[in-house]
Length: 477
Image (cartoon, rainbow, N blue to C red):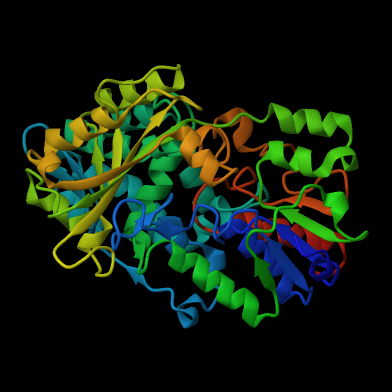
């Protein structure tokens, strides 16, 4: 870190992920001089893109599809399009192939989705129409800290289903295997066993987002989100520096306001004796969630899906039935590794050029594994792709394996490969990471990472709300 430059800043944000940059923007909009310090060689945290396999093949380190980014109240209030952020919408947000050779498709249109669910179409419409129709109100209340809702009735409609388990909701609302499988796959993004509450909440919010704002990809990869946020921060007079590790908050000038886009464990390390032992103990008890085992592929052709409808979606869920998906997530949560893991696959190069050389393609996929797992899952992941796309392996030019330890080495916030900032069960969902949420016992130190409400996802809301809390306590808002 350049100490002279840090002394000029009234506020310092540690970490340059979407939440860190959102915190910095919020502070800069309030007139504070702000600098972002990033330990890694590149800015962006998990929202970064690079050539992981072969030259000319652009891959995203973590997230690639951003429904909560497109639907984020904070991002939507920023002029990110002026800074080059453009969303690419695939014809369908999601496809879920089945063993009979067909695929269930979650379409942008709620009615079109319902039409593909046969006997469960009416039930699907009843479940999702109110949530998708009131997305702005729902997002404002759900993507934030616990507080009195702006639209109590909209939140109540969501909460009645959200508090349930994903499996319980799917089996009580839907009769057929197709609708149950579709909802189970979306709910499995929770990283919770589908029998555990509130896994249904993730299925509902992500399904509603698909109909309200889509599941788009940023043109240019996840790095485009980082680039737009950085450009806006700099327009506001803020600055960001990569390759600038901070060993201790005490290394900053006295009186510096510090917002940390880091894990609770890292916050305790950076703060040291600035925070009391009891609070540091609580930070140490915050539990990480499941890890991700990720594969990136360079391909010489599109994935040869058995059902061509899968090529209409950027995201494809590979897991068959609700029962199979539930077994996979249950195994990972209990320390095991499913023979047929539930796999989330993204094929971005189908929907905008520049991700691969002409005629070539990229794809990535991951499954959930126990936190910190060292078990090799690459063969099992590829077997799941081959199951629904025979001949897939013949299309692979190169692959890159990112096991949980590899992910953590690239981003210290991904503890044990956890991309979501901590286990999102009821015990931690509303106490992320403690009852103080963004604040700490030190009035100059705040945490603004995905370990704070509303949790994981590229939406910037954690950083935005943490910065608002800091501004209020300083009497600047």
